Image 1 (tube, rainbow, N blue to C red):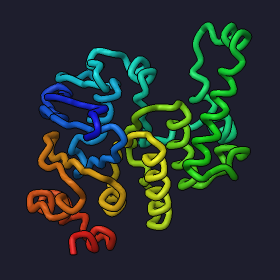
Image 2: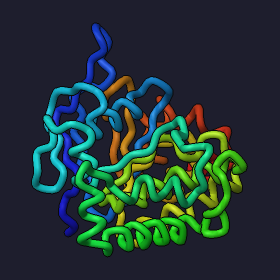
Image 3: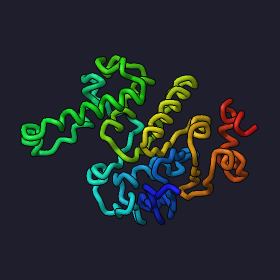
Image 4: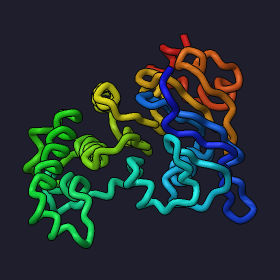
Amino acid sequence: MRRSLLTVNGLTVRYGGVCALDGVDLEVAEGAFVGLIGANGAGKTTFIDAVSGLVASRGRVLFGDQDISELAPNRRARLGLARTFQSLELFEDLTVRENLLVSAERSRWYAPVLDMVRPARQRDAERAVETALELLEIEALERRLVSSLSLGQRKLVTVARALAGRPRFVLLDEPAAGLDSDESLALGHRLRRVVHDGTTLLLVDHDVGLVLGVCDEIHVLEFGGLIASGSPDQIAADERVIRSYLGEAAEDSAVAEVLG
């Protein structure tokens, strides 16, 4: 049995009188590919924000054996917890490789001294970039400016940049948004390669066909609360999930095929 990499207990986020996340208990095993789905406003991005430390929350967040509930986002990132954003957050005037190096180099105030006494540090960063480019199959784009890329290519670069930081766990927030069905299918294939390479992923996306097709386990949020967890087949057959969410999404051919 695989050990847990992320455990959240009673995770709660409130914005004034609005409860955006209501006492969520969730566990992700190391090496798993987990999906998180739900309608708009269900609390998916809030969950990612709370786990990564970008919003104040109540409850407990464990990363491996360490309680990170009170840690700042940068300290969580240093432990190996990375995330992407719905907005692409890329440096438009840099090449793809340069964007990835920004993530891979992990700069500190004492970095120039380290570079003098430990030149292997730079080689480690270069290897991390090469690995990320290869996993996402975007080696041919490495010398291109980000401003020249298509939306689908930019999405891949965003994921690659997170991987270049050599994380143990990546929270992916809507990486397939705006992609057509072929691009989404290609993204799913590449994300499976990332998991096979040893990185744990949690995928939030409105492309339910993608989530059902690539994830090992899926959790479903509704109005900030967790209403179901299970395999893709179990989630696709869950009556409450179908009523609250999948029924609306079933117009998509990929979802309709899963639902039968």
